[in-house]
Image 1 (spheres, rainbow, N blue to C red):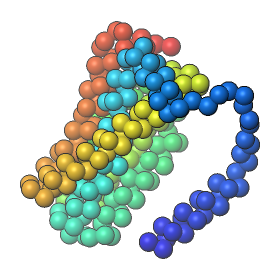
Image 2 (image 1 turned 120 degrees about the vertical axis):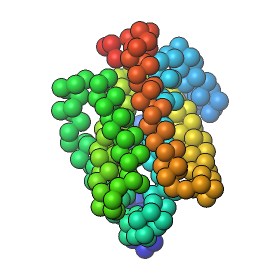
Image 3 (image 1 turned 135 degrees about the vertical axis):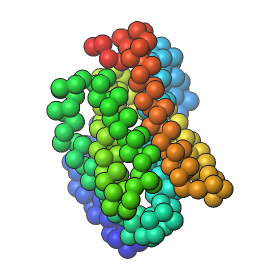
Image 4 (image 1 turned 90 degrees about the horizontal axis):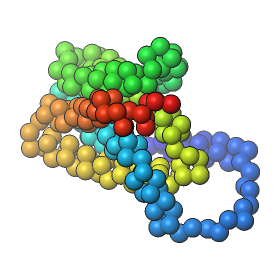
Length: 236
């Protein structure tokens, strides 16, 4: 906990040193309802963007929601490694996520957004599914590494697509809507994962977490095969 406190303090200091400049604008401030309404209007006219968001965001929900409960359960009940095992698997995911930032440009350049997303969600879901069935915590760590590598690669691609499609003047409003949706789904994911783990077992819980990636994968496949959404998302 002291390490967490120290990390927050360092983050605060570094943010305070960033060269931000406030620019006063003459625009009238809008209420939250007015801002969100503009976001909803945009999404109403861009159903493909809405569909892409509500499906692929579940891959983030898997990490911040279900797996925040299930990873420690895996370590304690399946591999009998306690907090050390949790830290190891979570750390391996983080290393994979870090490396994804270095390879994602090469991946999208060679395969494009569509194929890269399909591959990433498939690999992430498969890694999540097999992790509790591996022979040891070390193999589970490798599965988490691959999951971090593929899932964060997909996350970067999705954020890039949003930046290319959504105009700058409406981006904040749309992201706020998706942010609210993400947090609601995270809460539901955590509660369901905890209930499944308590009433059944961690294996079924991990199957539930894998379903998050499956829905994201099916979302991309549907967009790829529905010409209206495909033109809206991938044809630029």
